[in-house]
Amino acid sequence: MQKQLDARELVKLKLQKSALTSETEKVAKEISDATESVLVDVMGHTFTLYKKKSEGAKTIRQESAK
Image (cartoon, rainbow, N blue to C red; front, top):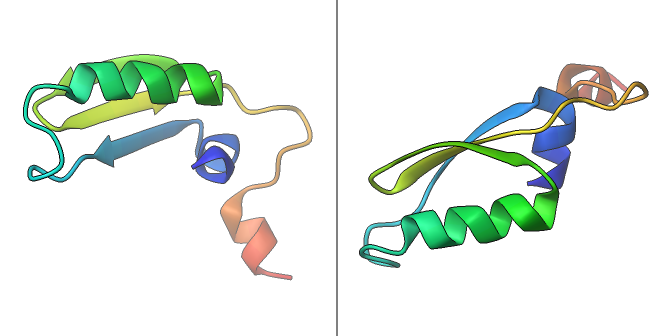
């Protein structure tokens, strides 16, 4: 997930409904802290994280073109 944040800045994640019932916000905060990103939104089992790209970060398309 760290690679996704580095390449895209904004990442939307969805937890499986069977995994957790009402703990999505808690899990989202833990992931946000671990990835040093900002928790933008939590809706149901889906949440969005934002992390500003670093200056030297490559996009996924640039990496896959090699």
